[in-house]
Length: 341
Image (cartoon, rainbow, N blue to C red; front, top):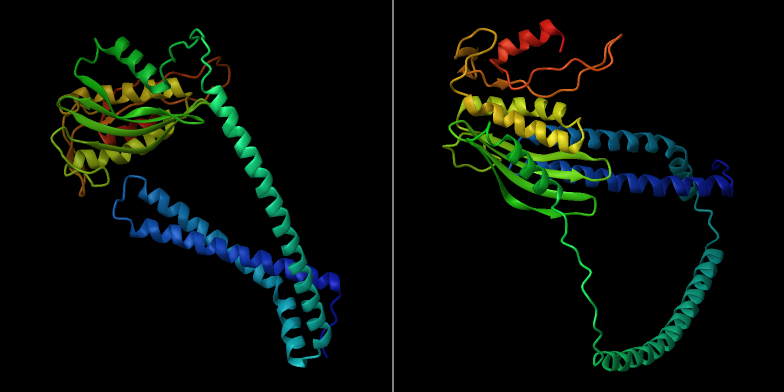
């Protein structure tokens, strides 16, 4: 005996099955993206974050599929029992199938006939439009130009203004556009190179979101001025390997600001590295310090950056944090813990 299920239950079962099949498709898509990231030869600074995000997507889709599979148990058991009993009205099924096929054939013939009429009407319209175009092409209308010079895009304008304001203080800093700024539907994108002589070179792929007035860093790479390498390769110098890790935290804090202020904060931060190898640590007053067995002895490779501070009770504005101050990583960690930054 098969378990009794109403037509409404069966329709619900079919909808659940279709939904589960869509989830299977999403699982396959998530697995493909995850596999592509793992197999990618170019693994940039954001690889770990991308790997983690994709792994979470795969787990989420698998959990969803598992839950939907539990809901399908009753429907699949009913289908298995019904198939074993084989009590189907095959004559009725065949009749309905033939009826649907005949109706589909009639619809096809009607669409084909309507398509022919549409093609005939389209030919008439095309001929009329061609004639009208020939007539209009001989008419010349005089019109004075009302075009005004377009305003510079976000990055072009603000980087130029920053250089104009700060150049006297940062004579050894240069900012070049590796990829010229291009306008998008939501703002603009570009790729710049920040060059601090005798210190570092930083490549940044940036995007400006006009609607939210925010800045996005899609990719970055910090290296020595002496290095020639691809962005996905690690620097051969330990200090710049460490700086690429530090930049992740620094950018997260600086990108909280609105776009123009965030861009200025980033440029100011890189400008503060002009004395990377000559300025002693603010805390221990030494030039080199043992960082770890992996990175060994490093100069003060931390420069404090702009960060929004919480407003404490009885304060109208948040306390300001000094920026561009040199620290060793260990000294900076101790300083941050002592001051509850």
